[in-house]
Length: 156
Image (cartoon, rainbow, N blue to C red):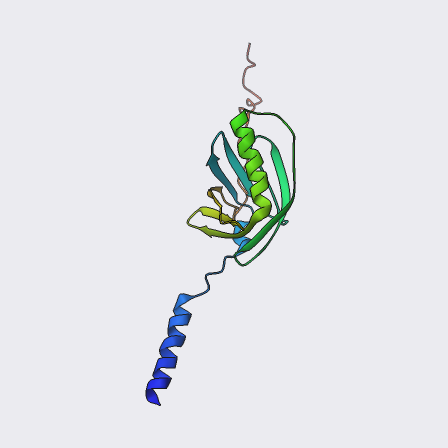
């Protein structure tokens, strides 16, 4: 009897030690990523206020997403329609076809990996993170020289 109780306790501790490996979608908000691909870098920013993304390959794009744990779904992508180099245009087309197929993601150590239903992946690197909610606003930089004192001689 004691060994069964001990075994149950050890199992419970082992499960607790594993922790929750689920992702936190809130960690994506306000963060910008880049993925170097053939012919073009793909940028991806998660809006800080809404479940929307935007970025650029050849064209600027935006769309909606929903995320729960490590599951994520992208939809409703729209983009501008400029032409670019053939390899960059091919990369963009593949990206726009890939994103609606994404079903899971992992965000760890500044890397964001999307995995599609067919097992294909794309990896992004974090380049910007959202400012902390309690961070003080940055002071504006001076853009011109200070005005001369009232008793200073005028410049000629």
